[in-house]
Each structure stands twice: as C-alpha cells, then as structure tokens.
Image (cartoon, rainbow, N blue to C red):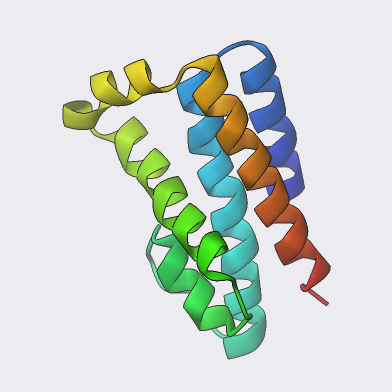
Length: 117
C-alpha cells in the first residue's frame, strides 16, 4: 500500500495540492516503518504517527539526518489534520518547500525499502 500511496503523493504534487502531497508522504513513510515493526515484533505496531518512535522500534541504523527528517515529516500529519495548524501549514507549502520535502521523502522511502528484506 505504501507504493500506491507514493504514487498518490506524486499525483498530488503534480496537481499542486502541496499540503496533501506532504500529508500522504507522511503516510508513505509511516506504513513502511510499521511494516518493519510488525515484521520485527511479530505483533501489531503501536498506534502512533510518530515516525521517529517507529524508526527506533525497527532497530535499523538511521542516520541523524534521517531521524531529523522524520521529525519534520511527522509534523505534516499534525499540520494537515488539525485546524489550529492548517492555515500556517498551507502557507508554508510552497512549490519549493514541497519539492524539497518530496525529494527527502523519496530518499528516505528508498533507503527503508532497501533494508526491508
């Protein structure tokens, strides 16, 4: 499902729905991490959207940079869901900002997928 969500993210970016593209980008990474957590624990992943917390449960050796990215990507979930954050987030989601984070999400996605097996 993460691959399908990644295509949705790509379409949202192309249609300039930048805040939704980043929201779906969060989901892409969350699903990959949760799949690894389930594989490692042989149990359900915790009910959280915190990517850094999930990353630590995978026991993969994430770089500090990747963990910092996950901290920011986690905010894309919060900023799109809750009205008190939405307007500021919409203003922040310029094409340049979204393009930068699209690339980071894509890089992180590839890094995680390479280590899934």
